[in-house]
Length: 201
Image (cartoon, rainbow, N blue to C red; front, side, top):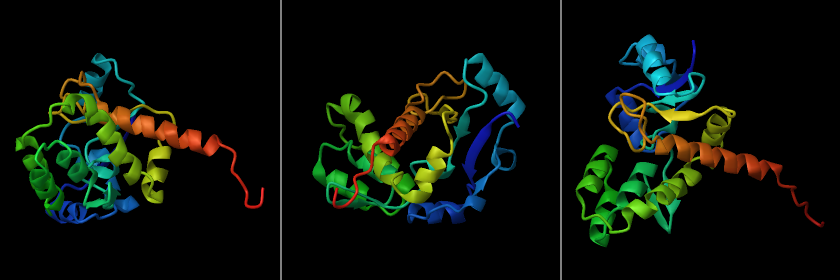
């Protein structure tokens, strides 16, 4: 197989677990041949034409998805997922932000975030907001291990519809989520290089 893909079963049961902060087991992270809605040979041609690294890590769902993972705490508030955090930060109105944060269904939280009155500086701050949420999520040992396990390979969100956070159907998207994950991966690597201080030193 020419690439590594991390995907999670997209049936209702697993999605329901995800929105409750379910942590996927290794057996939930499946080979893309079993879960992919497309032919990987066709996708390889698309990625190659777009100049993407065919040895990279491509995902759409699974452990790298903002819908999957443990609840995170930021600014004193609990969020059921990184998606809840990200979408709530769009809102100008604090009541709208709270409604998004308290929404038990991640898909509804995303929909509310896309419909709320958007803060004027969103385009300037959205990338850093995404990084803040991902840093907390991937500080959890299981997720950190998965992220570091990608080594130095480029990471791509293989979303066929998102040309901002993913690569889009033709591979030309900005891939901001993949870039965020790679940035955090580098931050973790740098942390391990720092000398550890010992008690009494």
